[in-house]
Length: 105
Picture 1 (spheres, rainbow, N blue to C red):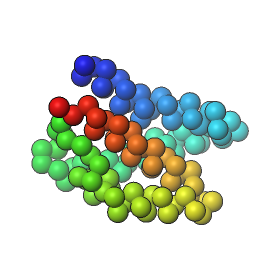
Picture 2: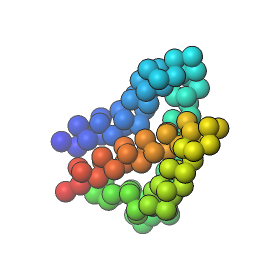
Picture 3: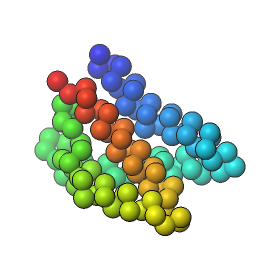
């Protein structure tokens, strides 16, 4: 089951964004995919946790950049056209981490 969880989680972080970028942003799909990948930098907040990694910890509302306050900012970033793709990528990242929370024992 852990292997399935790993494949689903990292597939959603790397492969699905490529498909989203290609399907919805055909002319700039490589740039959009790169933006999706770069938004994984919000995981830098994991270095503040002890232990650094815990497979049975839900990131949502635990790590600073995964809190409901941060999510509200990501939603607000949907409004300006210049930040919309970044906002979509950040919210997709949060959704991926949220789905991962269902695997917790």
